[in-house]
Length: 250
Image (cartoon, rainbow, N blue to C red; front, side, top):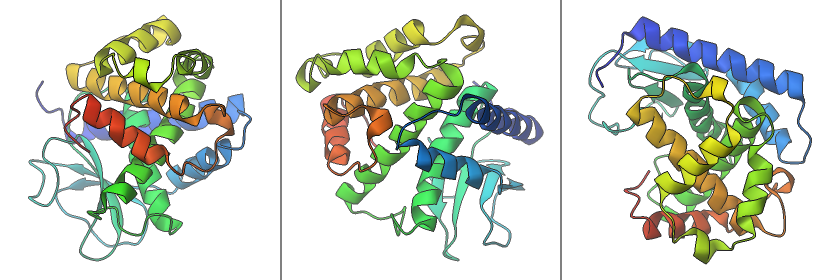
């Protein structure tokens, strides 16, 4: 899958963000966890969009579409990544790869969750090598992403499906693979209008998001994801799942 143009990537991302904003405003989901989702939506309205290979200015919330290979301090494999730069600002960097708007939006909001952690002083350094802190941040990001997928893409079907999966327990869930869980959930809860045009890399990101949502739902029992505000401990559950599945890291 080759790179697409920076302009096309920008248009896709902006469309995805706009569709997420509209869907959340229209659906008005209930549950204590949605307070953080709304803060993410509010933050997304402040994005300063840029293209290039280096940040320019700050401290606004910047999303930078890279115009070539990522700089050496970034992960060359990641399509979307949040990074704390030398000037102390946290930015989201995006490589020019083919995504559909809604799933691009999901991936971008995942990274915005890391930026929000930094802005709210929940996670002081997204580049921290503290493994427990890193996985706690990922738990918060995948949690918010799951709530958005349910609201924006799955027409409210994902969270009930996760509740049903959670009854099986974590040990049984982990006997399955990421692609098995992700593809099954996708086929069960995503309506046909949102299934078109997915590329391999997008499909992989989608399956990881859905599989880790299932892990979080199982770890949160007896609470449901929409009722979980404090994710203490679920980072280690997520880490255990990732290691069990041989997930290469974040």
